[in-house]
Image 1 (cartoon, rainbow, N blue to C red):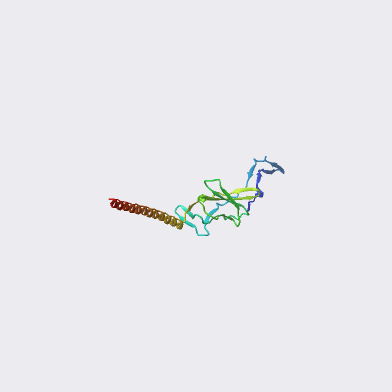
Image 2 (cartoon, rainbow, N blue to C red; image 1 turned 135 degrees about the vertical axis):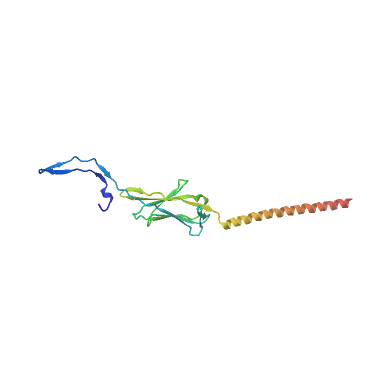
Length: 192
């Protein structure tokens, strides 16, 4: 048998036949055996990109700058027609599904928010001869959402200005109080 396809699925039995003295003899049929054809799908791969360069790779995985866009792509090298990819966001019930186009599917995140932080994985599913086959899940990819360095600098500057402004106002208040105290002393000397 050179090529296995779904047409060969079914029940199979054996029977032995022989001829002795020009007479045919047959054994009883054996117990039946069911033959099923399975499709061993490869594990898909998962990748991450950020079109506007908001992606940084670190020791703990990927870090996306808050507000930037990012794209998670699921792909598989098997050449089966159609199929769908499911993007699984662990720690929640969120699963997004998209049809496979050229053995891949892209999941767009136009604006990175803190709720997008977490672990992501992909699964590929294809229907062949009315039967559904599912791949194993990819290894999880951890994504962290971080605040941009520029925003951090701006926030620090604002905090410093607020602190400095607060000190100035205290100095002004103290200066006014000292000046009032001097005037009161002059008035009391004049009255004596």
